[in-house]
Amino acid sequence: MIFLARRIGFYLVTAWAAVTLNFFIPRMMPGNPVDALINRYQGQMSSDAIASLNVLFGMDDKTSTFQQYLHYWSLLFHGDLGLSFAFFPTPVAAIITQSLPWTIGLVGLSTVLSFIIGTLIGTAIGWRRGTWADSILPITTFFSAVPYFWLGLLAIMLFGVVWQVLPASGGYDGGLVPTFSGEFIGSVLQHGLLPAATIVISSVAGWILGMRNMMVTVSSEDYVTVAQAKGLSERRVMFGYAARNAILPQVSGFALSLGFIVSGTLVMEMVFSYPGVGYVLYQAVTAKDYPLMQGVFLIITLSVLVANMLADLIYALLDPRTRQEG
Image (cartoon, rainbow, N blue to C red; front, side, top):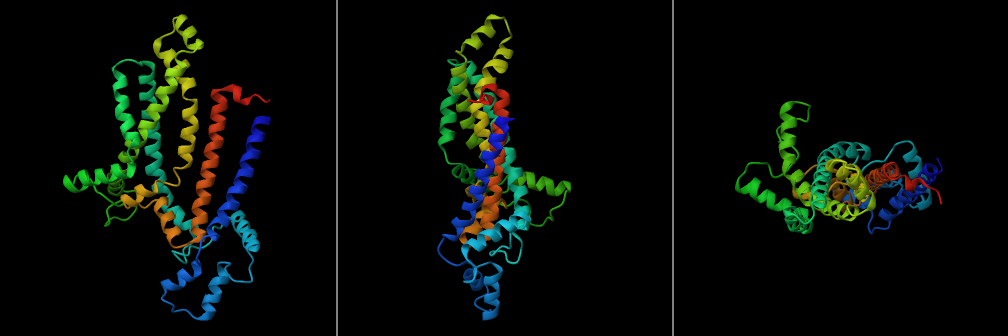
């Protein structure tokens, strides 16, 4: 209980610091987002309308930054993320709600698949070190060094332009209406195949190398030797003793990866014109959209904190030594 209370306290303080930075950093950027909103309407606004916008977004001279900060916390406790500047007057929560499932579905599934595939392959290669399986390592090293957006461009050129077997952009066919019909789901899967394959190929190499190196390290430990001396099967020793301890660092890395799933892969979504959170964040930054930036950053921060908390709990279950108090 003491361990759990300390971790919860740590994450609460971290969440407060992250939200505070989330509020102040966008306001340190040069420029006024209200002016950018006015320019969208080519200056066709009265002085009263401009003053009302400044009051609405808390940008008037009478509202101090500290008052804006307190107002921001009040909105958060009420579940209100404000109105978007770039997509005015659409609420930020509505924009994030529309884009979040696309990113979680694509990047989340790709991350889980790459972790499982990479961990299993790394376990097998590390356990059978010195055999022909080590010949795979140069290939994985090459793909781990190649930027995923370059792989994405290569995939678009080959499968979307040269052979034209898969769509090269978008989340679904433009003539379809988003529903749970088989036609729409099939279109989504077809459009997501190239970006998903790009993410898996570019990230699975890191999981393979990490797990392989840890398996080589733990394979020489005494508890593995004792398990083998007891006559246990090779499969049980490999997974129940060696892999169980070798996977501990992988769990922490996987938890961080899950947290950053929400942020998406910005460049990948831009390359494939995919309607995810990463592309929304890019639009918010270019338009100096404070509420939208803060909303996206808040979701990213909370997801990373929750993922780290889950990683701590899983780590404590796998290795009871982490629960011991000093």
